[in-house]
Length: 242
Ligand code: OAD
Image: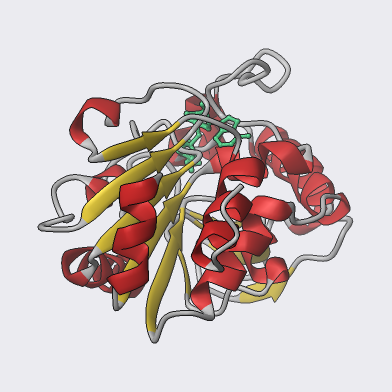
Protein backbone atom coordinates (compact mmCIF):
# COMPACT_ATOMS: atom_id res chain seq x y z
CA UNK A 1 0.00 0.00 0.00
CA UNK A 2 2.79 2.43 0.95
CA UNK A 3 4.44 2.40 -2.46
CA UNK A 4 1.11 2.73 -4.24
CA UNK A 5 0.23 5.79 -2.17
CA UNK A 6 3.63 7.34 -2.92
CA UNK A 7 3.14 6.70 -6.64
CA UNK A 8 -0.38 8.13 -6.56
CA UNK A 9 0.87 11.24 -4.74
CA UNK A 10 3.32 12.10 -7.50
CA UNK A 11 1.43 10.77 -10.53
CA UNK A 12 -0.06 13.14 -13.06
CA UNK A 13 -1.77 10.46 -15.10
CA UNK A 14 -3.87 7.66 -13.60
CA UNK A 15 -5.87 4.97 -15.39
CA UNK A 16 -8.27 2.49 -13.84
CA UNK A 17 -9.64 -0.73 -15.33
CA UNK A 18 -12.67 -2.20 -13.60
CA UNK A 19 -14.70 -5.38 -13.93
CA UNK A 20 -17.82 -6.86 -12.41
CA UNK A 21 -16.17 -7.41 -9.00
CA UNK A 22 -16.47 -3.72 -8.17
CA UNK A 23 -20.26 -4.03 -8.41
CA UNK A 24 -20.42 -7.27 -6.40
CA UNK A 25 -21.05 -5.34 -3.21
CA UNK A 26 -23.86 -3.46 -4.90
CA UNK A 27 -25.53 -6.85 -5.16
CA UNK A 28 -24.76 -7.57 -8.84
CA UNK A 29 -23.29 -10.99 -9.65
CA UNK A 30 -19.85 -11.38 -11.23
CA UNK A 31 -19.52 -13.44 -14.40
CA UNK A 32 -17.21 -16.23 -13.35
CA UNK A 33 -17.81 -16.38 -9.61
CA UNK A 34 -20.38 -18.34 -7.66
CA UNK A 35 -23.70 -17.89 -9.45
CA UNK A 36 -21.79 -17.15 -12.67
CA UNK A 37 -24.41 -19.07 -14.61
CA UNK A 38 -27.78 -17.53 -15.41
CA UNK A 39 -30.33 -20.27 -14.89
CA UNK A 40 -28.46 -23.03 -16.73
CA UNK A 41 -26.83 -20.84 -19.35
CA UNK A 42 -23.20 -19.84 -19.66
CA UNK A 43 -22.48 -16.18 -20.41
CA UNK A 44 -20.84 -17.05 -23.73
CA UNK A 45 -24.06 -18.76 -24.79
CA UNK A 46 -26.13 -15.62 -24.21
CA UNK A 47 -23.71 -12.77 -24.93
CA UNK A 48 -22.90 -13.69 -28.51
CA UNK A 49 -24.33 -13.01 -31.99
CA UNK A 50 -24.95 -16.76 -32.40
CA UNK A 51 -26.84 -16.92 -29.08
CA UNK A 52 -29.01 -13.97 -30.11
CA UNK A 53 -29.66 -15.50 -33.51
CA UNK A 54 -30.68 -18.77 -31.84
CA UNK A 55 -33.04 -17.33 -29.23
CA UNK A 56 -33.47 -13.53 -29.08
CA UNK A 57 -36.22 -13.76 -26.46
CA UNK A 58 -34.00 -15.78 -24.12
CA UNK A 59 -31.19 -13.25 -24.55
CA UNK A 60 -33.55 -10.32 -23.90
CA UNK A 61 -35.01 -12.09 -20.85
CA UNK A 62 -31.49 -12.20 -19.42
CA UNK A 63 -30.72 -8.57 -20.28
CA UNK A 64 -34.12 -7.31 -19.10
CA UNK A 65 -33.53 -8.99 -15.73
CA UNK A 66 -30.03 -7.53 -15.53
CA UNK A 67 -31.26 -4.08 -16.57
CA UNK A 68 -33.84 -4.13 -13.77
CA UNK A 69 -31.19 -5.30 -11.27
CA UNK A 70 -28.78 -2.53 -12.36
CA UNK A 71 -31.43 0.09 -11.72
CA UNK A 72 -32.28 -1.33 -8.29
CA UNK A 73 -28.57 -1.42 -7.33
CA UNK A 74 -26.78 1.56 -5.83
CA UNK A 75 -23.14 2.55 -6.41
CA UNK A 76 -21.05 1.37 -3.46
CA UNK A 77 -18.10 2.89 -1.60
CA UNK A 78 -15.71 1.51 -4.25
CA UNK A 79 -17.45 3.32 -7.12
CA UNK A 80 -17.62 6.49 -5.02
CA UNK A 81 -13.92 6.32 -4.07
CA UNK A 82 -12.95 6.17 -7.77
CA UNK A 83 -15.14 9.21 -8.51
CA UNK A 84 -13.38 10.99 -5.63
CA UNK A 85 -9.95 9.90 -6.89
CA UNK A 86 -10.72 11.41 -10.31
CA UNK A 87 -11.09 14.89 -8.79
CA UNK A 88 -7.38 14.84 -7.83
CA UNK A 89 -6.04 14.43 -11.36
CA UNK A 90 -6.18 16.42 -14.56
CA UNK A 91 -5.52 13.20 -16.47
CA UNK A 92 -7.70 10.41 -15.11
CA UNK A 93 -9.40 7.71 -17.16
CA UNK A 94 -11.69 4.96 -15.95
CA UNK A 95 -12.12 2.15 -18.47
CA UNK A 96 -14.79 -0.30 -17.38
CA UNK A 97 -15.93 -3.65 -18.71
CA UNK A 98 -19.18 -3.19 -16.81
CA UNK A 99 -22.46 -2.31 -18.49
CA UNK A 100 -24.32 -1.47 -15.25
CA UNK A 101 -23.87 2.37 -15.31
CA UNK A 102 -22.84 2.41 -11.64
CA UNK A 103 -19.62 4.38 -12.31
CA UNK A 104 -21.68 7.00 -14.13
CA UNK A 105 -24.16 7.18 -11.28
CA UNK A 106 -21.31 7.48 -8.76
CA UNK A 107 -20.10 10.60 -10.59
CA UNK A 108 -17.14 9.39 -12.67
CA UNK A 109 -16.79 11.76 -15.61
CA UNK A 110 -14.01 10.46 -17.85
CA UNK A 111 -15.55 7.01 -18.29
CA UNK A 112 -14.90 4.61 -21.17
CA UNK A 113 -17.49 1.85 -21.36
CA UNK A 114 -15.46 -0.76 -23.23
CA UNK A 115 -18.26 -3.31 -23.42
CA UNK A 116 -21.05 -0.79 -24.10
CA UNK A 117 -23.98 -0.18 -21.78
CA UNK A 118 -27.40 -1.54 -21.04
CA UNK A 119 -28.96 1.92 -21.24
CA UNK A 120 -29.51 1.62 -24.99
CA UNK A 121 -30.91 -0.89 -27.50
CA UNK A 122 -30.02 -0.64 -31.18
CA UNK A 123 -31.20 -2.19 -34.38
CA UNK A 124 -28.97 -4.76 -36.09
CA UNK A 125 -30.35 -3.59 -39.45
CA UNK A 126 -30.55 0.21 -39.61
CA UNK A 127 -28.69 1.18 -36.43
CA UNK A 128 -31.73 2.95 -34.91
CA UNK A 129 -31.17 3.47 -31.17
CA UNK A 130 -33.59 3.80 -28.28
CA UNK A 131 -33.11 4.26 -24.57
CA UNK A 132 -34.23 1.47 -22.30
CA UNK A 133 -36.23 2.20 -19.18
CA UNK A 134 -36.54 0.01 -16.10
CA UNK A 135 -38.82 -2.47 -17.88
CA UNK A 136 -36.25 -3.14 -20.62
CA UNK A 137 -37.26 -4.21 -24.12
CA UNK A 138 -40.67 -5.93 -24.53
CA UNK A 139 -40.49 -9.07 -26.71
CA UNK A 140 -42.91 -7.61 -29.27
CA UNK A 141 -40.41 -4.83 -29.97
CA UNK A 142 -37.46 -7.11 -30.76
CA UNK A 143 -38.36 -7.23 -34.47
CA UNK A 144 -37.72 -3.75 -35.85
CA UNK A 145 -39.81 -2.24 -38.67
CA UNK A 146 -36.75 -2.17 -40.98
CA UNK A 147 -36.47 -5.97 -40.83
CA UNK A 148 -33.57 -5.94 -38.36
CA UNK A 149 -33.72 -6.82 -34.66
CA UNK A 150 -33.27 -4.66 -31.58
CA UNK A 151 -30.28 -5.82 -29.51
CA UNK A 152 -28.58 -4.41 -26.44
CA UNK A 153 -25.81 -1.89 -27.20
CA UNK A 154 -23.30 -4.27 -25.66
CA UNK A 155 -20.16 -5.88 -27.02
CA UNK A 156 -20.64 -9.61 -27.38
CA UNK A 157 -18.07 -12.37 -27.63
CA UNK A 158 -16.38 -12.28 -30.99
CA UNK A 159 -17.24 -8.61 -31.59
CA UNK A 160 -14.79 -5.70 -31.64
CA UNK A 161 -14.82 -3.07 -28.88
CA UNK A 162 -16.19 0.41 -29.72
CA UNK A 163 -13.18 1.78 -31.66
CA UNK A 164 -13.05 5.28 -30.14
CA UNK A 165 -13.41 4.08 -26.53
CA UNK A 166 -10.71 1.45 -27.13
CA UNK A 167 -8.34 3.92 -28.77
CA UNK A 168 -8.71 6.31 -25.83
CA UNK A 169 -8.27 3.49 -23.30
CA UNK A 170 -5.04 2.29 -24.92
CA UNK A 171 -3.67 5.84 -25.04
CA UNK A 172 -4.61 6.35 -21.36
CA UNK A 173 -2.91 3.09 -20.34
CA UNK A 174 0.19 3.93 -22.32
CA UNK A 175 0.68 7.33 -20.70
CA UNK A 176 -0.45 6.34 -17.17
CA UNK A 177 2.03 6.42 -14.31
CA UNK A 178 -0.32 4.37 -12.14
CA UNK A 179 -2.88 1.80 -13.29
CA UNK A 180 -5.40 0.33 -10.86
CA UNK A 181 -7.01 -2.96 -11.89
CA UNK A 182 -10.13 -3.48 -9.84
CA UNK A 183 -12.54 -6.41 -9.61
CA UNK A 184 -11.70 -8.19 -12.84
CA UNK A 185 -10.45 -11.71 -13.45
CA UNK A 186 -8.46 -10.19 -16.35
CA UNK A 187 -9.16 -13.09 -18.68
CA UNK A 188 -11.25 -11.26 -21.28
CA UNK A 189 -9.22 -9.59 -24.01
CA UNK A 190 -8.51 -7.06 -25.26
CA UNK A 191 -9.63 -5.21 -22.07
CA UNK A 192 -7.16 -7.10 -19.85
CA UNK A 193 -4.26 -6.01 -22.06
CA UNK A 194 -4.65 -2.46 -20.73
CA UNK A 195 -3.07 -3.66 -17.49
CA UNK A 196 -0.30 -5.66 -19.16
CA UNK A 197 0.64 -5.13 -22.78
CA UNK A 198 -0.30 -1.43 -22.88
CA UNK A 199 0.86 -0.56 -19.36
CA UNK A 200 4.39 0.45 -20.46
CA UNK A 201 6.11 1.97 -17.40
CA UNK A 202 3.05 2.31 -15.19
CA UNK A 203 2.99 1.07 -11.61
CA UNK A 204 0.17 -1.47 -11.82
CA UNK A 205 -1.80 -2.33 -8.68
CA UNK A 206 -4.45 -5.03 -8.50
CA UNK A 207 -7.36 -4.70 -6.08
CA UNK A 208 -9.19 -7.98 -5.79
CA UNK A 209 -9.95 -10.42 -2.94
CA UNK A 210 -8.65 -13.28 -5.10
CA UNK A 211 -5.68 -14.05 -7.33
CA UNK A 212 -6.22 -13.45 -11.04
CA UNK A 213 -4.61 -14.18 -14.39
CA UNK A 214 -2.38 -11.10 -14.01
CA UNK A 215 -1.56 -11.15 -10.27
CA UNK A 216 1.97 -12.41 -10.92
CA UNK A 217 2.65 -9.67 -13.43
CA UNK A 218 1.62 -6.59 -11.44
CA UNK A 219 3.76 -4.46 -9.11
CA UNK A 220 1.40 -4.51 -6.18
CA UNK A 221 -1.52 -6.63 -5.06
CA UNK A 222 -4.07 -5.43 -2.53
CA UNK A 223 -6.24 -8.35 -1.47
CA UNK A 224 -9.67 -7.27 -0.32
CA UNK A 225 -13.05 -6.07 -1.52
CA UNK A 226 -13.01 -2.90 -3.63
CA UNK A 227 -15.49 -1.17 -1.32
CA UNK A 228 -12.93 -1.38 1.50
CA UNK A 229 -9.59 -1.03 -0.29
CA UNK A 230 -10.47 1.93 -2.56
CA UNK A 231 -11.80 4.18 0.25
CA UNK A 232 -8.66 3.27 2.24
CA UNK A 233 -6.49 4.46 -0.66
CA UNK A 234 -8.37 7.76 -0.82
CA UNK A 235 -8.12 8.18 2.97
CA UNK A 236 -4.37 7.52 2.89
CA UNK A 237 -3.96 10.08 0.12
CA UNK A 238 -5.80 12.53 2.35
CA UNK A 239 -3.20 11.79 5.01
CA UNK A 240 -5.39 9.72 7.27
CA UNK A 241 -3.64 6.35 7.46
CA UNK A 242 -6.05 3.63 8.57
P1 OAD B 1 -15.29 -11.99 -13.71
O1 OAD B 1 -16.51 -12.65 -13.14
O2 OAD B 1 -14.49 -12.76 -14.68
O3 OAD B 1 -14.32 -11.57 -12.52
C1 OAD B 1 -14.79 -10.89 -11.38
C2 OAD B 1 -13.61 -10.61 -10.48
O4 OAD B 1 -14.07 -9.81 -9.40
C3 OAD B 1 -12.95 -11.84 -9.86
O5 OAD B 1 -11.54 -11.78 -10.05
C4 OAD B 1 -13.31 -11.74 -8.38
O6 OAD B 1 -12.27 -12.26 -7.54
C5 OAD B 1 -13.43 -10.24 -8.23
N1 OAD B 1 -14.26 -9.79 -7.09
C6 OAD B 1 -15.31 -10.40 -6.50
N2 OAD B 1 -15.81 -9.65 -5.50
C7 OAD B 1 -15.05 -8.53 -5.44
C8 OAD B 1 -15.05 -7.37 -4.63
N3 OAD B 1 -15.94 -7.21 -3.66
N4 OAD B 1 -14.12 -6.41 -4.86
C9 OAD B 1 -13.20 -6.57 -5.85
N5 OAD B 1 -13.15 -7.64 -6.65
C10 OAD B 1 -14.06 -8.61 -6.45
O7 OAD B 1 -15.79 -10.60 -14.31
P2 OAD B 1 -15.04 -9.61 -15.31
O8 OAD B 1 -13.57 -9.65 -15.12
O9 OAD B 1 -15.74 -8.30 -15.18
O10 OAD B 1 -18.03 -9.35 -20.93
O11 OAD B 1 -15.41 -10.25 -16.70
C11 OAD B 1 -14.98 -9.61 -17.87
C12 OAD B 1 -16.02 -9.73 -18.95
O12 OAD B 1 -16.39 -11.10 -19.10
C13 OAD B 1 -17.32 -9.03 -18.68
O13 OAD B 1 -17.30 -7.66 -19.01
C14 OAD B 1 -18.28 -9.75 -19.57
C15 OAD B 1 -17.83 -11.18 -19.30
O14 OAD B 1 -18.05 -12.03 -20.31
C16 OAD B 1 -19.04 -9.29 -21.80
O15 OAD B 1 -20.19 -9.56 -21.50
C17 OAD B 1 -18.64 -8.84 -23.17
